[in-house]
Image 1: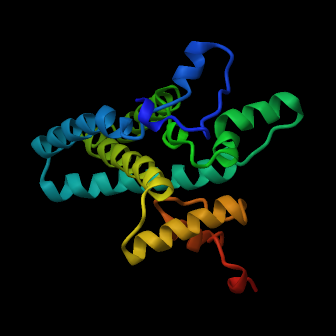
Image 2: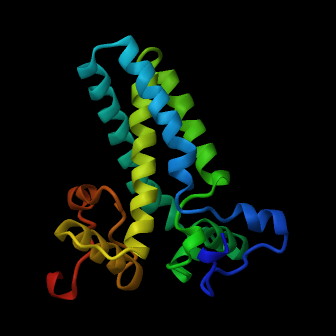
Length: 205
């Protein structure tokens, strides 16, 4: 565990327990949620034809991308008024922009990810019901895992493919040039769709 701790991993809580829960190992989403996704996929394939299960999972994945984009744009980058609002923004996302290479705060800790996925599961159950609950939630969960894993990789791994280099460049532009653009980490097509793609200076109109 100590191998990942760096000088860019600041203490943000005086309480030791809260401080510990504010951090997460970058592989935690895979180990915590992938078994759940696999189990949901198994239930889905057991209860319906494969084409229907895959279609429902793709819907769940699409729902995740909407949450990723609009959550990042409208929630993570919203600064409520006052000192309390500034503190809340810092805890939710500001700390990541102040310390973008902190390896312990590149994926959502369970204190954030579990409520998000729990609310999503309740909404999917209410809207879709059985048997579509399992494949839709599996696709949603897989989208979350892909997002958190890719986010870590873009910050801490050299990208060797053209796509990887392009994704990393756009995300670094979001961090170091214009935080009002480039909200889709794993879904840059939504930045294309909504006109918020991170741009080089030479790309600006």
